[in-house]
Image (tube, rainbow over all chains, first blue to last red; front, side, top):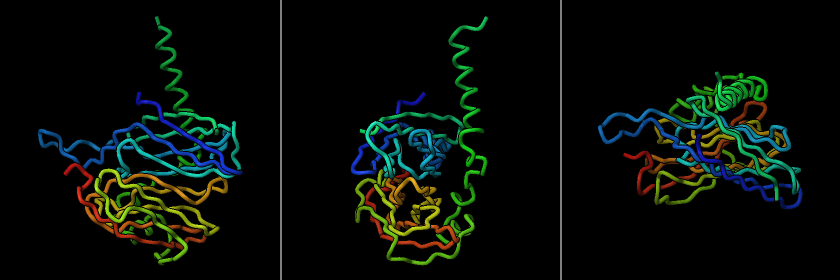
Length: 103
Length: 151
């Protein structure tokens, strides 16, 4: 499976800024390999973030998101010790979830 | 005879299948394929069922003026407005205009950052789709010195 996501969640007041670095090729489907054949599209389509088990953010991505995608968002009402879980699903149906604690 | 490894693998697959049905009910709605294939701002909004785009000072698109590497262009879309349903990031001259779509809930601020590939210098849009279907946008020109699709 892919490498684990790096998730950093920092609380500031009653909000937490979450930064996620995912490990994924994000092939746009536009690139040609050395032989001149189109490399098929392979990219994360759906992302969901949960705060203490409750879904707080969902996103849909296209092939234009960069390789090893970066994502930053801010969760309201989060405090140190809370759990943030991020899940992605790609167009091949592969999926991955990683969790971090708000610091 | 099934080894423990086989059993674990099967459980993971089963869990994944369960997760895709039970835990993420919104995925029962199709991934917005039509919107991701649209080639212009207006077509993306039409595919999403939103109104015609209206430029607004209250929506902010953040990004560099010049991106040295078109493969990794940091972009931020945000707004202080209330009643936002979705936030979209679009790169006009990419083969498919929409880069990302964020569903907004009460639990997050309307402020999302990611990095996108840009094939060439282009206008970049942040669009806030409101709960009433209105689409408010802001745009910014980002110049790219080295295109981002490996070409």
